[in-house]
Image (cartoon, rainbow, N blue to C red; front, side, top):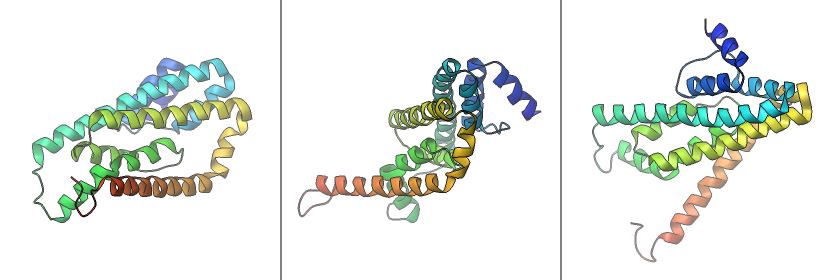
Length: 199
């Protein structure tokens, strides 16, 4: 049934991509590989491909915000703030400082990564909604428009290119995380008054 739904939505073109990306990002397990579908549409029609990329950005952002707010409301209803000094409190502090990096990397890199887990964590742990949405938008613009460009340049070989370079994408994702992590730590150390603690 999911395969038939996916095929139907793809047949609808940009509108179908919009709906499919909302479903995919909000947690509904749609069939198929979304990135490959987007590339194939770009190969068939570059003009349609660019429009599909825009729809994918809008749809994916919407779907991720749906999942984010669902997690936020669930977290407010069923969880209690952790006691200061506990592991839970330390993890909450770590995620509020570095959590958006864990959202940005899997939202950007076209390899299987647990993005939904990080989206749910961002919602439950109180990440500001505007910052979360901005990170998703930037990552999805780079990813989806980049894939359409790749489809136009390489044609049917685009999906093979992604599969062949999966390891490179993985190593790149790790490298980006390390760079962003170190940058945030450097920024925070610069903001800490000499002889005092960061507020």
